[in-house]
Image (cartoon, rainbow, N blue to C red; front, side, top):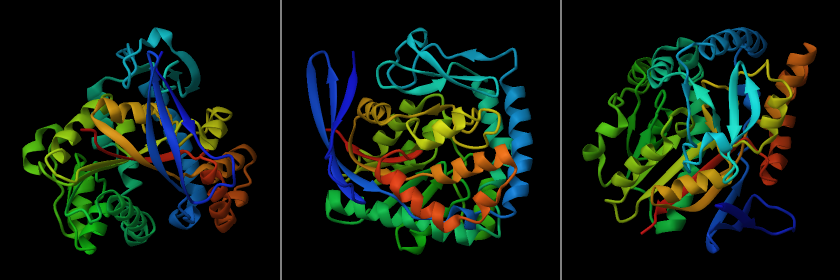
Length: 372
């Protein structure tokens, strides 16, 4: 059976490191050298406005909306793993959140929903759900979010791209752009950048705040307009779509026309402290193992395998997450004492660095180059 392993040092971990990922199948092995980037210090509490009231409102909304969606009679059975195609009959149940059943495969450990709403229902949710969109389109927080999140993303993107090719990317396409923060960060830095975003409210926000139009067409329909772009980014998209491989296949058609092509995806990790905290508190989840936010969660193995099957070779991995924030929030949900969350922002930020360096974070950003 297909499996992945890693070779890494047992010595003290640092924010920059290397390791080897090894793919094994049918007595054949292939090694991939991976540059590791560990941690991204961000005071998450400072990003959140009216934090306690927001959490309480979201808890009620998430529980009712997700339970309703996953109690619908027209649910679709997912017959096979979206990454490797192994039969869902061979998977095991690993978590049940708001009536939604997450299962895990025996090959790459990929986690996905055994049953889910129809594709149209998923699309309607992301296009029309005001509460979901509002997370990313708060006007007051726009500039702070850009400088705290999008600018560090771009700084890291430039670092890994330069290390790979010895120059900066000339054209970047950001897919699932949300409110356009990353596109704006690129443009302020002098890089030609465009964004694709289906949500009309997010596109309107980008137009109003940043002054540019995001492409509202389906990503599969825009290949010819963006062929030859050096870099395609997905800052939280692959976990939302039933067909992540089709998304990456499309990205390959775009960047393979460049002599220096690259793809970067930020995805949620199953093997993390956040997953552990949430599995112990399955009725109070508003992020991460959220059956409408994430219809699947990746392991490092399933992410690497997905890249390879779409003709990308993994070359670098950035581990950082919101695990300490999540754990403290769950403590607040259990006890009603939210001060442990709201008054410890700097402590959370520094503690999270240790989680990231041990690769127990709930986020992975994976770099791939065309595997020619």
